[in-house]
Figure 1: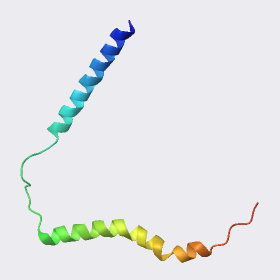
Figure 2 (figure 1 turned 180 degrees about the vertical axis):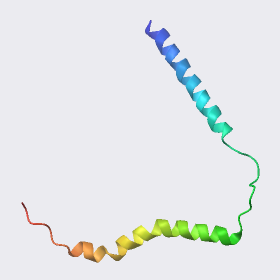
Figure 3 (figure 1 turned 45 degrees about the vertical axis):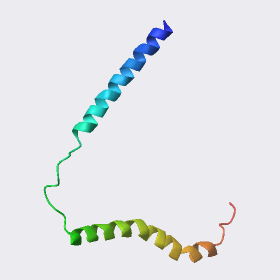
Figure 4 (figure 1 turned 90 degrees about the horizontal axis):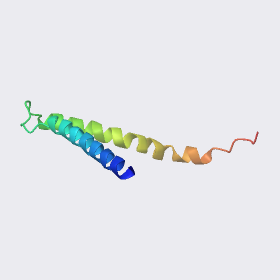
Length: 76
């Protein structure tokens, strides 16, 4: 009885995985882009992305001495 149930569950999960895979494949396009992006736009986007990644780390490193000098709060 349990063997039959586990086989049915495996079949159902494989069918669900197959449906998900087909949906994922249908959303992938293999055509070239409609609008070409120039080198200026690429540089701008890469600069914004790099700034977005590095700005928080730079802020933390710049204020590290302030974080070290803080006194511990008094026990309540």
